[in-house]
Image 1: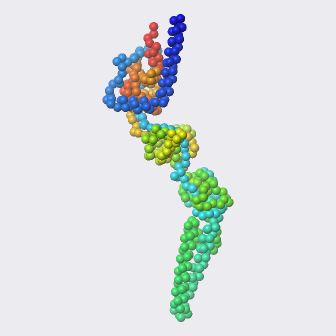
Image 2 (image 1 turned 60 degrees about the horizontal axis):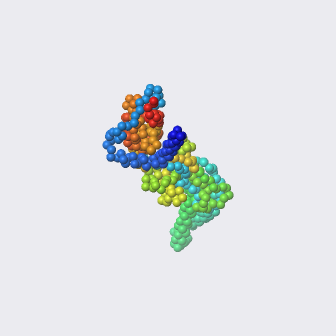
Image 3 (image 1 turned 90 degrees about the horizontal axis):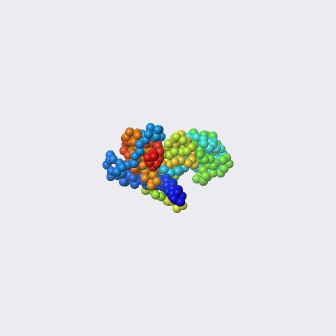
Length: 407
């Protein structure tokens, strides 16, 4: 009867320990940052080189030469921990570096000279339209040039006839007025064609050949890559009527759009530095800066939008890619660090590490941990830089301690 009773109690105790360990692991994931901050606050008033506060007699174990094979040690060192926040976001085009190419006048598209992903330069003709407005402007120019030629000849004749009595001063004045009016109309007609992008050589050609051509060339206003093409030959287009026939983008910069929790509204701000890692581009770290922070909290997700402009000179990021978005929210701190394998969480949530001076006698220390980066735990209190600590095999030492001395 006593044997069964003891067996049942042992099983219950074992179950409780397992449950505590599982719960402790989950609690560690959820509240790591809270422990980090509280640990720093608690250690804020501690002298820089004060000895770690431990119990009167810290638990310790002595290892045999065979047992030492399962334990690795190294000196605790100082590591720089970044103060940041991370979340998942997506890559998008930099809309500030996008140009929608519209025609200034309505007409039907005659030809398109670029395709998607083509690289273009500023001033390059990207499509042409048949413009009635251009034809009207050219017709006006031809007429103005003809009238100017006629009035110039009439003025020349009047100047010859008046001195010899073949004409009156009134006729000379009228001829002068007509010629000046015609000259002004010609200049206005030439300027009207310049609005269509015609240069002086094009304008002189229209005047000399008296040929009207309504083909209007639309040029790229900037360097970039064609990222959208909505036009096609025969399509009637108008100024500012969406969608634009072409969109040209400078792909050397991208936008990273992510969402942070409402609890982080006070620490994520405009101008903060960000780093971005994309799963599709392993081994590359992209840098940028926050250029927009949303004013509204999404009522469904309790998050707000954050956008950063990041440099991508090689154009390896693609809009729609998922990426990890890390924002530097504070000044980096230098602190003692121990590899993750050197920290063990006990069943009651207390964090421990093992130290030694001779690699035979090991003492268990209670430590307060902070941030976790680069495979290291920040030690807020409990271990000093330069002390020899266990980096692999800490669980093994815990098991030996809990098992007690062998009989």
